[in-house]
Amino acid sequence: MKKQVFALFCVLLSACATYKSPERSTWGTYLYGASFADMNETAKIAKKPIYLGRGGRVVTDVTNKKPEMDYGDKNQNESAMILGYMSELEYKLYDALRSPGVSVQRAGTDVVVILVRDAIMELDAPEISSDGDDNLGKIANILKKYDATFLEIAGYTDSMRDTTAARALSLDMAQRVGVYLAEHDIQQSRMFIVGRGAARPIAGQDEWGRLTNRRVEIRIAPVR
Image (spheres, rainbow, N blue to C red):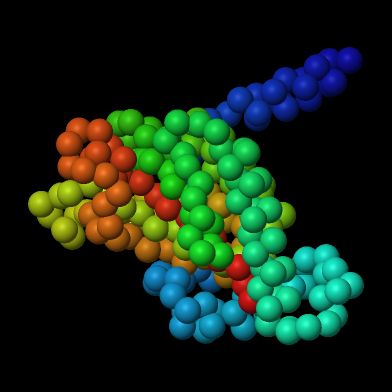
C-alpha cells in the first residue's frame, strides 16, 4: 500500500513539475540535424533527402487517397491532398490554442503559429513559462500526428538599437522552442531555426506593439 501511495505521489509530482530548458551547452545535441537557415524552397529541397532518410514521410504517403484521385491530373490531385492535410492541421491547432498571445494563420499551403513572447516565456527571465509549457506541449502533440511537415522556428524582437543583440536574443528564443520540441519527440530534421531580430514587425512600436513584436513564429510547411 505504501509503495502504491509513493508511486502515485511521484506521478503527481512529475505532472506538476515546472519545465526548465536544459543547459545551453547541451542544445547542440538536442538540435542536431536542425538547419539554422531560412526555410525557402531551395532549402526544403536540399533537406528532403535527409528528412526522408531519418524516417520522414511526404503528405501523399500519410493521406487517405480517394478512389477518384487515381484519375485526372496527378499534380492537381496531389495539391488537393496537401490542401486537405494542411487544413486539418490548421483546424487542430486553432482548436487547441485558444489562449491570449497565441494565434494560428494560413499562408498559402503553410500554417503559421504566432507565439507572443509573454505567452510562452517568463516575464523576467529567458525561460519557458508554465503557460508556454502548456501551449508548446499542445503544439508538439499535434505536430507528432501531422509529421509530414517541415517547421521553421523564427524568433523576433521589438525594435532595438543594437541589431547584433536583437538577433542573438531572437535566436535564443527560437532555439529554446526548438529544444522544447526536440525533447517532446519532434524530429530535428524537420526543423529550420532562425533569429531575425527586429525584422518583419507585425505591430507598431508603442508599448503594446513592442510586446507583440517580441515573438516566435512556427511556420509549418507540407513535405511534397
